[in-house]
Length: 408
Image 1 (tube, one colour):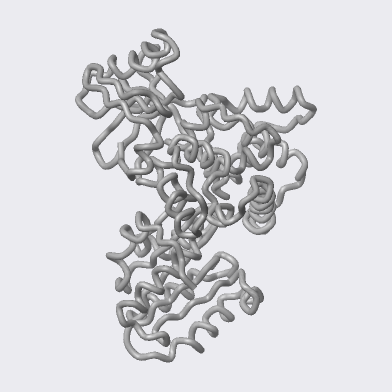
Image 2: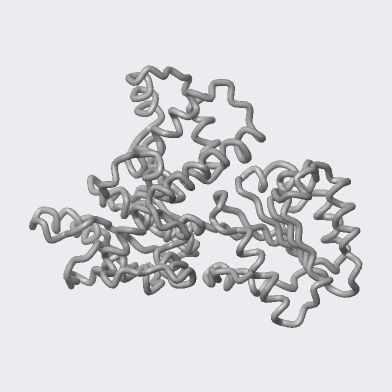
């Protein structure tokens, strides 16, 4: 079977293909493409001449392997397949289904002739025993649903029509989201039905199996509230007040644990505020973004695009997928949409649909950036405006930037 190549992720992993000391851990929200990425890696190894018997692949969510639940069972199926001489490449999909998998992986890693790749859909994979036993012996590669460039590439790969108007195609992407399988469906309703099933699957496989939720109804209301209010500045108290107004009263600790569960399942990502003067994070108010906008549009009947939070969400996930740390910036009384940090380098982003609607809008977007006195890059990102030049600030349109795979 031929798979669409997610080149940005393959580039990060290729240098570790033959590394027997480091376990390669691919994480990401369920159905974002982790299994296909592992299959692509296996195919690249075959193309380089690695024999089939040296490639050992188990998908523990698939028929035939779903009953593998204990470390002894996992060890046995690996031993039964590991008959080849020389370096063997071991791929295990959804390894967190097995209790005590850490000891098994560590044992095969210590043998020195296994290059190990594993996937997991949630943050529990990298907690507890795994961290204790394998600290310094694994690298996490976090995957996200398709970005806009990959979305266009996937449509081309599937021979789906692509609108000649790039901005219209970008709007399609905003509404449909980036789950690879959703791209296969032609009808928007079919896409929504599929993404709704992903939400159910995450609850059943990544949440319910790991955490005891006594009040499922309250949990689902919290989930829907946060999905509906992605990109809005909020606090625990604000959320509690809104839920209570709508008839759901829960404790602060319960809300906090529900949000952590949603973040661990990678439905949500938390974005904290950062004060540029003190260089410290600000406690309290923060924003939550969705790993995929499809979660919002699949669970709501309204297909109108609110470009402010939607474009922020796309920029946040795009930055995270390119290994930036992301914060909301405060500069005195002004606010910058995002401060991006990679290594010791910074960049600053203001994001809006357009700066052409009024002089006030233009000033509102440029003023925070102009008040930052360092020499790191500063960007105004819009949807489809004529490109401006002002005080060294870089103006880009998001559809062009993402299609070209540019970084900030």
